[in-house]
Length: 367
Image (cartoon, rainbow, N blue to C red; front, side):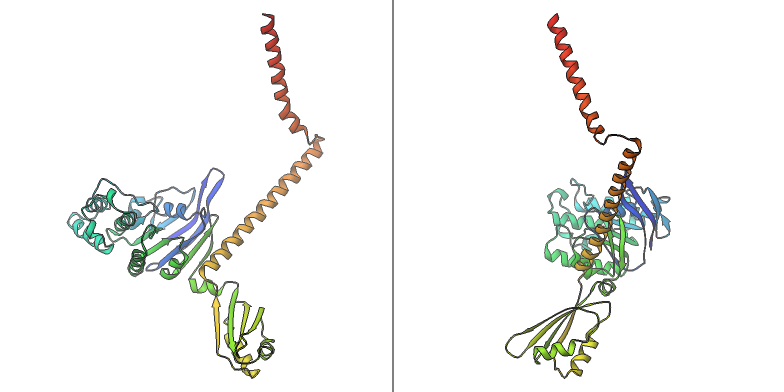
């Protein structure tokens, strides 16, 4: 299990991670999402002990990564965004080296290396230099070092970058299978991948956690639903039957001229509106071919959450600017200062400089 408590990371005045707290349960795959600069990689680097935090704690399988880094790291397999490879080693040499660094018992090293290569389908390049491998193979070698030693927790930063479609499918299946035996945290910009592979989704924006839930629950909490209805009834009959429905925010009716009416309705709220729609159509005497509901995709939810977070920050910035401007104006008024005095002060040094240069030229001429 992983527990992050009040995690904060600052670079000067910039807050990369802003008092972040969450728990990751055992035996699940967690998807870590966020726009560029949201603080995902920084958080993962702190969680794995590669970066120190400004404040807060990270507990990895009972060990505080900041206080007991060696014990905590033994339980972690980490694939950073750029795999830590040694190009002058062969794949087998590199994975053997990684196993030794992880203190895998000497008698088990060879078996652990072979197992990792088999899992990642890289046995065919075991004795090739890493520098001669394609980007996709290098990514898989990096993944292999992460699973050596059978760590309890796997932290994977963009694990499918550089892979071809076939390899991506294979890696996704591997992540799913690893999730049954390990705790997996997966960072990715591919939202479909997270939706397909992950049990729970964490969404970050501007260093803060804005969502933590299953993809299904996030969809239910989104802005609403879109429903498409097809019916052999006339458009006015369908419109009349559906007129009394609650929570409808938009309606559009189209008649294809061949006896079929298509109605598109949008609803607000979390519930499934199909039951009420079918009841209304039945009460109105309207037959129907289909009633299909579409919830927001993970991409829609991601944009909704991160855009709203950006708006909050923009509003806060605007308020801060207004406060500073009003404060500055009040100070100027109180002191009786001329608001253009700062501009004059900027010009005066240049004027003095030009006078000094002219004086110097006169002295030289007199010589």
